[in-house]
Length: 298
Length: 264
Image (cartoon, rainbow over all chains, first blue to last red; front, top):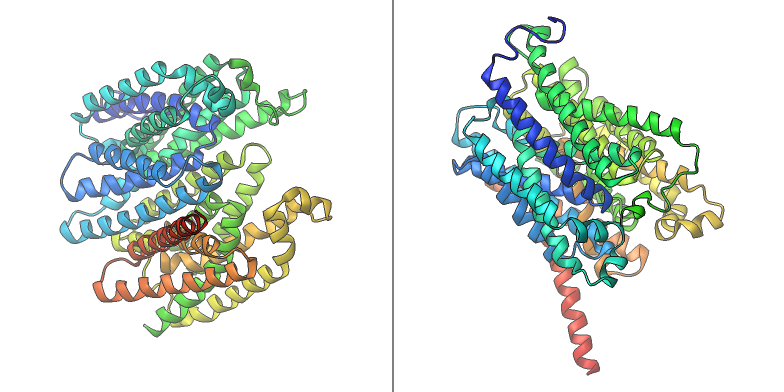
């Protein structure tokens, strides 16, 4: 047992909070991420993480709760991207890039001001790369409520969302208002990103949002299975990451460990590699990328 | 300061010309991911104590190859996202094990106008020349495959080789830009000014020249403002790039409104 679970792992309340929060965040990101990957919005999702960074840094500067900052920043960013034309595919790439760049510039300013304001170090690293072990337990109820709201919202708009994600033309023909669905989804995306920012850091939250859903979509043939697999893989990566990070204090010695986020991201990438190998071995039929297999879901 | 001007100008010339193709090809996400690979490289070089430029170049190239390798297995944007977070996480792990000082970390991520010392100017200039020559050689097939990859294939261009070669050029120019502009903002210099140039000019060479000019202007503004205010250069690069793009969009909108008015 000592090889994997170092002494005190499960009796430690910090670890317990990290495991609960990690599971919640992974489930929310896993569910929202399925649609993000289906809609081809990985870049938009990542851009929201950078806007959330600015929000988190701003909150830290103004001594507000980081969770509020991450989510507030993300929602404002989603609005900005919508305003300058993320809807049109042709402009999407550049519009996303410009918002991302401006937000990162703001983060640079805020993080620099933080270093002037306080003597405590490490705020840049904890905002960007996360530190779930330092999250205050009082954040847990807020995170649970927000995560629950996103999941309820997803369930509420699941039909128009699935349809517009697979084929925008088909959805429009059936009278779905694409813009409304798109904005509602971007807001949920922003909240999901904000939540995972407190666990694995704002700019790394892309990992949980894209990795597990991309794995699930490679192998699952039904929507419900893809969703379940995506959430399971996310939780597995996060929990293993928390355990490894806790253990790494013993591996490295001298009271130093490697960041949780590093292990979570490495696990996600590892899962993706394994799933790619499995999917390739199983793929006897020609690749189905041209016609998405998900069309059968409608 | 002379160094800052010189190295900044070299970087902006390069970012403006590389960025023109980045915008044309719609590969903004890859251009965002590759500098983050360079960030991991700088952090790693700091950890083992070798020349940062070596780490920057090796890891930026690693990110470029990672993206093009993974893209064969899955959708391009997913591959880019995964390569990006892996590189950032590696960088975070390197920083955690080396106990880097916070200002050093911030400089790496958000830029430092004195990021290139006088001894490093020669290798930076040499690599920049390599990139420009590479772009000049690639110019025609790159332009063709950016506009229509079917047309390029029909003309006998090996699109996959061109893609990979272009990512290598992006990687080398990112490696040069990261120490000055910062890992997270190198990309906005490659997006804002070139996107503005594309809005303002419809001829390829004209847009390319305008892109380079706007990019140099953006960087000069950023270096000067950062010098006067003592605020990080990344803040100015990010906001000035966005402002240049918005100004171009506004100008184009005003033009088309006037045209419609005259026609009516």
